[in-house]
Length: 312
Image (cartoon, rainbow, N blue to C red; front, side):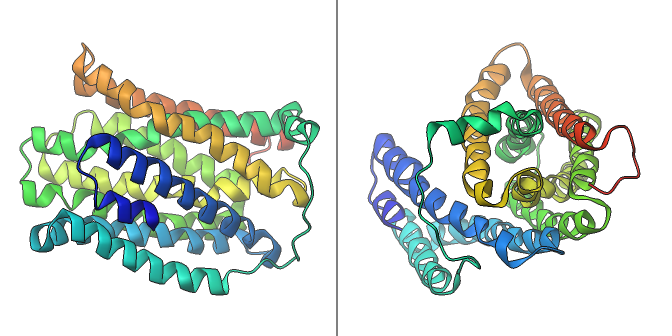
């Protein structure tokens, strides 16, 4: 909240980068990770559905905030748009801080270097971490560049601003679906299916797509299938981790995946400005999504073998 309030006062690029990009981001990470880790203790049978429902919160925010901010900037200006968002987030965080509870009482303990190194000695954890790391490189490309490509393709500017809300609205249903189906057919199984579909949508639909209807259809399909990435990260890590280590193991996965989220934008900007053009960044995104999903598939095969019907 403090970072957003300072963002509202920003006049220079470095001020906004420090306020929202560093200060607010640190706060978001400190809120998101512990809250996510509490779910494991409360649910054992329908944990996938619980995570799927939990993950719809960020989808709902992804629908509301882009529209809200766009309208507020027009009505009250940039500064007050940021402050109103900060006050809204503050009120929601008060509710969250009063209600989020861990099923097991906290047991403070020192995390040693040996404990942090141990997961990297387990092949399944390494495969899962690598898979999420690679998938992150591809997944954020449509989210960041779809509105820009739509404008260049001639889509109406008033419609372009709704592409990300459409994507997030579809993602909401995708997260619930993948969570529920994960409990029924296996969390790894449903993740592999929908994330392979994510890569296929990018390569088969986004590359040739240049019409308004096609771009909107891609936005909805991509949002629905990519929603599994967010809702199933923690359950996939938890499924191959001891209960006391789920928290910091999930943190390790998010830490390494954030490197992909940080670097994919400038990489794709260079591709777009170079010889690759739009086709280049679309191929980049699709291939990385397929590659990341393949590593998750390898982790699943390491545990279950080549048996397709196994629920895992």
